[in-house]
Length: 89
Image 1 (cartoon, helix red, strand yellow):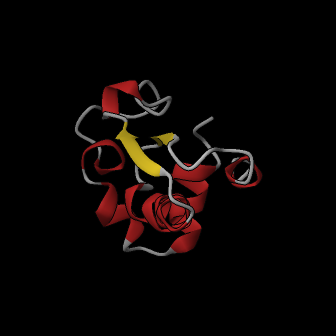
Image 2 (cartoon, one colour):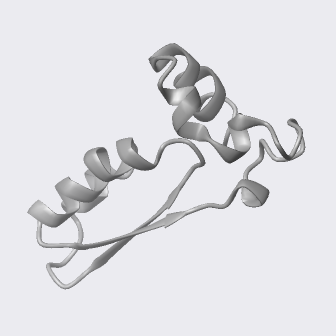
């Protein structure tokens, strides 16, 4: 969310590039992508791969945390926050 104030300082032909942490793909488009578009900025979201996440070395490569984030997100916000937001810089 720290990036939102910088929208006001960007010119209309700017591109907003965001690195999207594993497990947060849907939320980031809503919280950053849509506001960027409304301000006339082109939004590019780069979804990191499981092996690019700081979680990669903490879990087995077959763990749903890495390979099926939506199954973890379906368990509720507390799981999403604890795993994907609190543990990825």
